[in-house]
Length: 268
Image (cartoon, rainbow, N blue to C red; front, side, top):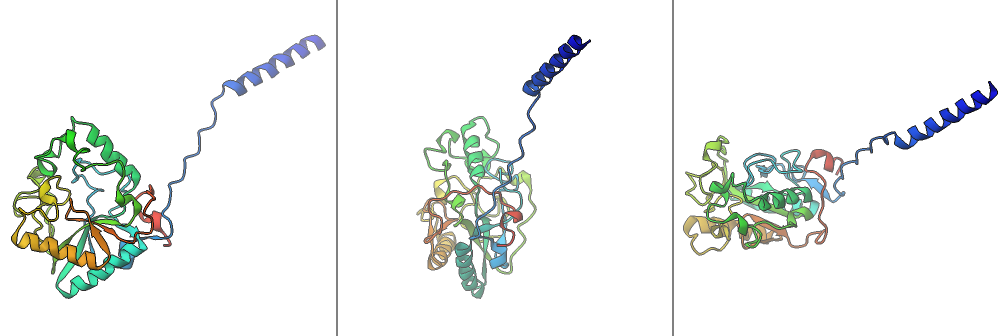
């Protein structure tokens, strides 16, 4: 009996060792989402009067789907950029205008989403509105899509002007999403902004801030926006009338990836 008991104990020990080797490891703990550094704030906490029409949490984007990393329709910026917008807004309100932001801080995962979409040449869902005259295969070469964006540094903002009192932006009608972004304002996607000659995110040379074909009130509106933002410390990207970066941005070489959500800036 003693010999059989010893053999049994050996078998049990061996089986336990085998189970320890072959049993699946516990599931890895989910990595916590990164949070914004303390220098980032929700724009609304600095200036609640600036209108926010955040496009990328919605399907009305040049990809036709909400963008990765946008959990809420919220403008997040570095504190210096938010304060500079507040200074610009204060001047504009005296003249009967308001700023309206379309996009602010943009996580790197959103930029990665843009890149994946741009490489999928079969996906032309929103071509009719956002890039009707541009071959999708040219989006990288022509500079419309890149693997890094100044927005991810937190001090770049896409914005426009609204004449007060602000008119409603109009119903989000998917039936008008295929009207070219450079069509007359009353034909393209309804927007409460002044007429800038093209809509936001228009992949076309007509969106260049100083394109000579844009004249009259449209050109004056672009120059008014540019002058106001320049005086507040921003620099315009010449290829996009809506794109401005704070000249003295605090993170000129850092690209962040925390999600666009209130929890990212709680307590800031």
